[in-house]
Length: 334
Image (cartoon, rainbow, N blue to C red):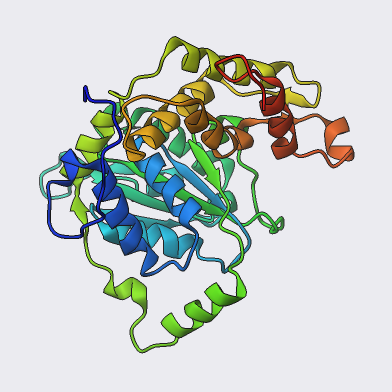
């Protein structure tokens, strides 16, 4: 990618080599998911950006707004293997990662893969399972592999965990620890639809065949892998990297926060900005790419002090203040 001028993407849905045209594949995936999800352009874009960054997503919202439908729509749009884990208190780590057992016929041990051995994994209501089972995902999400009885098994690629949780349920739930939250590239909230969107939703989902069942495949795993590799080629200047570092450093010194963004969070922020630039038709990062990704990438990594919580201060408010005070490359503030 040497030409840094803005290419023109027509949005044509005819079969093309999507791996050579990020904008066209991005548009096709969005349109396909929109057949099952009404509106929510920003949510779908963030989900696809995470996929291209090899990042995992936590979908947190009230029940019934389409978290599971969104994850299923992505899985149907990409020709990848898909498994859903319905987390409950009795789910064990071996249900997730797999286990070894003795074959009674041969007398040899065999590995039985768990539900996580898939390219797209929906971890439904992840906060309803025990911390021990939640921790089974730590290696999976960071290393892209599982270790069972001393043997390591690589996961198929591309690989993404889409986890859901309801923020209003407290009975029978186990809050995700900071180490687990930090492994999610983004936390996304879907929100309620508008009146017009809900009317469209009612029409679509009261027909004999729901839109989700009619979704077709847009691309295959090889095209997603090609785009993931292409994200890393997007140029980030020293000024852009400095901007990211100043933002994350500010979270670590903020008086309202007891825990700021980690270096993993800084890497995720810059990588998300690279994907945003790529899908915008550029092979270089702009400050606006970084600013756009700050809230979904960093918001869930911050831990407020007890005093800040008593004052009803939110992590979003803290980030907004930081973004106003950190100078944008070029010597200006916003």
